[in-house]
Amino acid sequence: MSEIEKIDQTSWREKFVFDDKGLIPAIIQDYQDYAVLMLGYMNRESMTKTLETGLVTFWSRSRKKLWTKGETSGNFLLVKEILYDCDADALLIKAEAKGPTCHTGERSCFYRQLRPGESSQKNSLEK
Amino acid sequence: MSEIEKIDQTSWREKFVFDDKGLIPAIIQDYQDYAVLMLGYMNRESMTKTLETGLVTFWSRSRKKLWTKGETSGNFLLVKEILYDCDADALLIKAEAKGPTCHTGERSCFYRQLRPGESSQKNSLEK
Image (cartoon, helix red, strand yellow):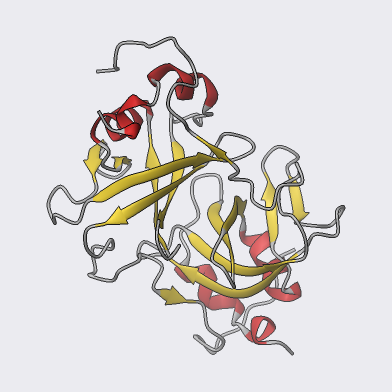
C-alpha cells in the first residue's frame, strides 16, 4: 500500500471545504521543477478515487463525470504530495506527469501569456 | 508606463472566461523559485485594477469587495507575468512577494500537507 493509499479517508472529508457545487479547485504542479501544469476541480468522489489510485482524478464540469487525467492519452498525473491552503478550500497537488498535461500537446495548460498590444481597441476602465 | 500597464484592456475582457459569479481563479506563483503562494479569485474590476497598478488585486468573496493583497500587511504581490490556460478560465500570475503571502505568516497559504493517519477513523468509500 502506497503512502497515498494510506491517507485516511475521513480526515479530508471533514477538513476540506467544497463549494456550493461540491467542488474544490486543485492546482497541479510538477513535483520536480514546480511548473504549474493545470487547474482542475475535484468533488468528494474524485478525491476518493485520487487517493485510492494515486492518479489525479477530477470531476469534469463539462462532461459531468469522473475524469482521470490521462485515461485516454496515457499522460497520467501520479500524485506525489497533496497540500491544502489556510482556508482548506483549495488544493495544491504535486505530481509526476507522464507526458504533456494539456490536450493541445503543450506541457502545461498555462502556455499563453497576456501580452501588451494584443488588440488595438482600448475600452474605458470599468468602475 | 510599465509593460503591465500597457497591456490592452479590451483583449482580456473578450478572452477570459468568468464563471456564473463573474469570477476567474488566479494561481499566484513566485516568479523566481516557482513556489505556489495562494489561489484567489478575480472579477473584471479587480483584473482592471491589477493591470492598472501592477499589484495583484482580488475580489474577496467573503468581504464582497476589492482586495489588493498586502493593503493592510504591506506584503504586496507585484505582477511579473500573467498566463492563462487553454480554456481561458484560469490564470497563473507570476509575482514578486513583498513578504509572507499567507495571513498566518507562512510564506505560502499551502503550508499543510494531507498526511497518512491524521485520523484513526476510516469511512467506507463513497460510491
